Length: 346
Image (tube, rainbow, N blue to C red):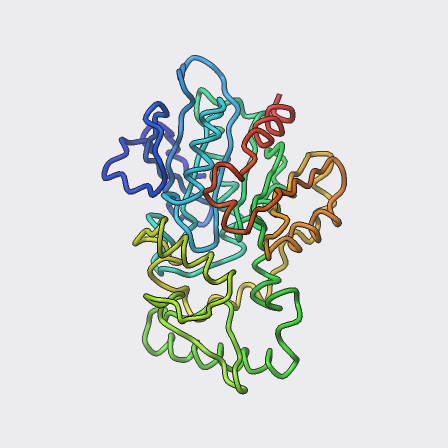
């Protein structure tokens, strides 16, 4: 934390509102910035509860996700809903993405993304109307791993919930259910990454590419955007679900998933880092996993839940796909989230 840490100077009026979900005008929202311990300024939206009273002390929730999304998408929706339930809530863009800082853009770091959650705790815990002993975090999709990893060692985080969980280390290094790459295919990916690293070094800036790298006919495949303007006929249901959200109903130009791609060398960090390696140390602080019974990502929640110690909860939403848990209010169990945090942030 910098020596001139003045939290009031980090809060400004939210201008040019580009949120892609239904905004509740009864929830006051501010634009904020805060600095992580690597010196990167992280941008966020601060949601204040209905009938907010600056003389009261509130519990607070720090929210981010998914991997490649921005705060104007589903993390903002989650934060708004938690504010409607009486929490101070912060949704933020991870470093190098959205409106957050970082000289390079669209680069993912498992370590720095984990740190961003703790920096968010620094920020909300410095607000005079937040009780430092009542802070929790929510990670969505690919930011679930960093949320839990942050909470394992940052004991200021008293409770953690994750929704539509994706373990991006497992997904990037091993792909779907850990059985995508053969030994030869992984070596092909490593050689591709080495070549892209030479190209980025010579160019002096990141070159876009896939973060999960397909190997087809013995060659690594890349592209300059994650999605084409139109999906080919016969696209699988999972790809269609992501496309419909990021390129359809929740398109946002700053979202990597909507309009760009990660740096082609992004997989390096995820090949060398393990999320949730010491998840058993989170106990006795509680963790909640939310997934759908028809979500293709359900196995990530199942595996993490099995490794975690009690107190823990696994909420399986009937009929919910992975992307349903991004923004479908009839599927996301906000009442369960409300009870979980109110029970554990007393």
